[in-house]
Image (cartoon, rainbow, N blue to C red; front, top):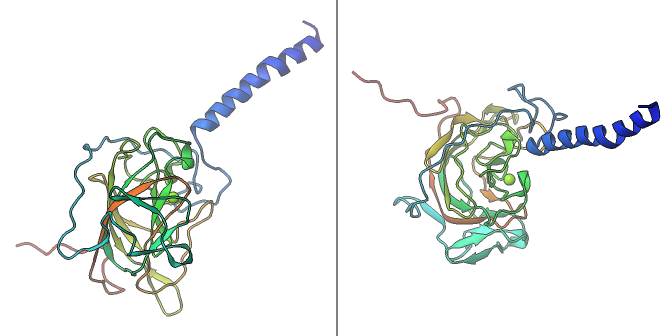
Length: 279
Ligand code: MG
């Protein structure tokens, strides 16, 4: 084989093969390696960060009825407890659910601090798109601390961006996602961060997330506001803030949203209640 022929074979056969392999690898592991490094040692949205194991949850049950002291934020009928672009929440409401319709994020009219939130969601069926482009939405406490909503049923994305992740910070402990179109539940216990009078964070936000009956974050401390391709940061705010639901362009559905206020802890108190001493 002369040199010209060898070069032709390399360029026309081997190179495309290698590139195709590289492309296939990239397609399987979306994410980044050029983003800032988190305290965990992983880059933000690190494509090499391990994915948590899949745990199939119990089948979808009936909507979880609110307890007596809960404030119902959405009962399937209207968006009167929500605001949106121009002051009006305009997501589609039908058949007992609301659906993202590209009219922008919506926020609760009321503000909340430490709280227990129950929310049910279903990602679009049939599934469309991949990675972050499949069934993306999110629940943001204070409008800034996200628990990710995504279709993570057989849909690979970077680990700190999959469903139930603390976006850009922590993957969930397991992938407890149900199939597209199936109703899923979040039960989220959120402790708001505390700031001193200079605006420094003296106690981070703490979250426990139960996804479809399975605990996926246990008293997890936020590193700051959740960001895309950037390190988390703290920006001081008051004791209460709105809860925001994200319009990421995918027609994700929500139903049965209720919330309970939790008594605040003093700034120097424990992150989670301590059990009484026995004996
Ligand atoms: Mg999101």
